[in-house]
Image (cartoon, rainbow, N blue to C red; front, side, top):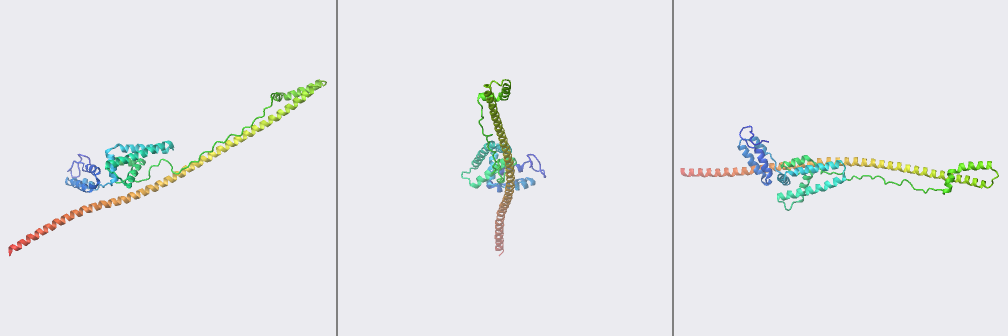
Length: 351
């Protein structure tokens, strides 16, 4: 693009015809775009800057939604920065799988888009916008949030048409994560059988007491009163040993059950984690395929719109040429009539 003070191939103009024309055309109402574009191209051509005239003539007329967005961005250049910043934050939260942050930023996204749509409508004086107009505005601001390049292009204020593409979605729609199993109890508590104090004492002293009793019987066979006591000590020691063995068996069983339960929990958690990873991978593939399909559909739509708008521009140009041709026809017909009248007068004079 030529800058102010730069020369052209013919060395005629020092004016930035293209820049001034772009500013005027995309800052004015699109209804008079075609007519004004022709006038500006003619000015550049008359000044000898044919390349600028050609470039101006090639400027495309924006649709009304695009023109409204251009006016908003020209009035408030900071809008593009807001879109870029919030879009970056949304992408970062999605990459980190931060659900809380994604929800907060999604609400901020809705508020920002609603605010920009309201401002664009106010700038354009649209009091009763159609659903299609709102959809075009929403799609364009959503695309700018999804793609920082789109936001930077909007900042130029020369948008030709609304931008429709796969919207920015920080989450993975339809993804259901498998929760880990609930913690089971380590086991059932069992009441330990605690012998009475006397039995406990006999448990510790039972074998020794038996040996002592045996020695006593050998050393003093005559003391019959000590024999019942020795027999009672041996019996208590046996009972204590049985109780200790039963308690040890119960403890071993409880430990084995606790270990088995822990291993089962670990295996279940591993299965849940694998299912979760697989679900994420499947969902990411679905999102990627849907995004590619949406982008292709959006590109096809843009191509068709380009074709239609190109034909509309050609039609506008053809209408302009038709108007000029009709004007020349009227002028030539008028000249023809004048010539005929002059010829008729000459003939009448010669008679």
